[in-house]
Length: 390
Image (cartoon, rainbow, N blue to C red):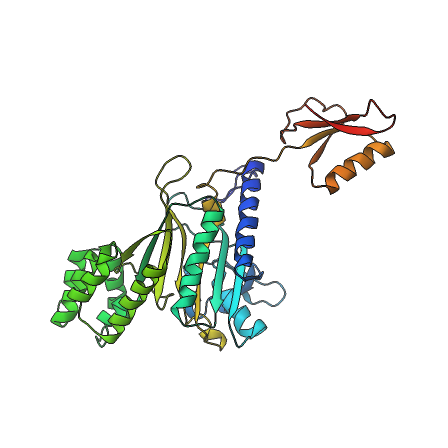
C-alpha cells in the first residue's frame, strides 16, 4: 500500500475547503460568545475510564483505545466532547450558578454511522449547566439557530422529541434491559410488526401506547393527538407540555415532532432536538445539521449532577451545505531586500491586507489568492512604493 494512502473515511483538507472551514469555525465561536458562552479546550485524549463513564458508556465502540507509554494505563481518543466539558464544569470550574461553555475541536470515531461520513469530525458545541428550566432549552435551540444562520442557512426545520414519553409509557413495566433495548430499536425505525411481537403479554394500555407511538410524528397537531390517544400520566403531560412550550416560543423555524424518535436515548433525559436545512447550495435535500437536548445525568459520574442542555454539530459536514465566502483579494509584490520595499509590505500586512511575494523565477505562476492589486515603484517619488490595480 502506498505511504500516502489514508485510512478509510479519513481525509486531508485542502486549502480552499480549509479556508471555508476556518471561516465557519470563527463565525460559530463568535456567535456563541455573543450569547455569553465561554470557550474551553478539552484534551484530545484522556484516561479511558474518564471518557467512558456515565453517559459516555454509549461511546465505547466509537472510541479508539491506546496504551499510555508513561503510566501504562489505557487512554482513549475522544469520540465526543460533551463528557469532557461536564468534567470541566464539575471539577475545574465548580461554579454554583449557571455556566455557559462552548468548544470546538476534532473528535475521532472508530466507525462511521452513515454513508460518506468522516471518522474525524470537527465538532462544535455549546452547553448550559446549572438551570433546569425550559428557558435553558430554548436558549440552546435559539443559539443553534443563530449559528446556522450565521453560516448562511436561513430555512430551517426544528424536529423535537422527548425521551420521557417512552419512559412514561413503560413506567412500572418490569422488563429486562435487553427487551427494553429491542423496544427502543423497533420504535426508532417505526417497526410496528416488531413492536407487536415485543409488546405481547404487556398490559393492554402499554401495548396500545407502544403501537400508537410510531404514528405520532408530523406537525404540532401531533401533541394534541398524543394527549388524546396515549395513556395520561403526570410524566406524559410534563413531556408533552415541555414540547408544546418550546414550540410556541421558537421563532423563524418550522417545527415538527416525532414522539418515537429515540436516538440518543441512553444519553438524553428530556427534550432532544435536531435542526435540518431545507436544501444545500446545489438544491439537494440537506442532512441533519445540528442536534442536541437535555442531559441532566452527564455530570453525575464526576460527583456533581447538574442540569445540562446543549447542542453540537460537525463543521466538516456543515461546510458542504453552505457556499464559501468570497475570497478576499490580495496584493502581489516583488521579492526583494530593499528597505523601502520591505517596509511597504509590512505596512500593508499590518493594515490587514494579504501580500503575496513572488519569489524569484516564479513570477508567472498561477495566482491562488486572486491578487487584484500589485505593489510597484512609485513613479512620482524615488525609492517609494505604491499599490495599483491590476
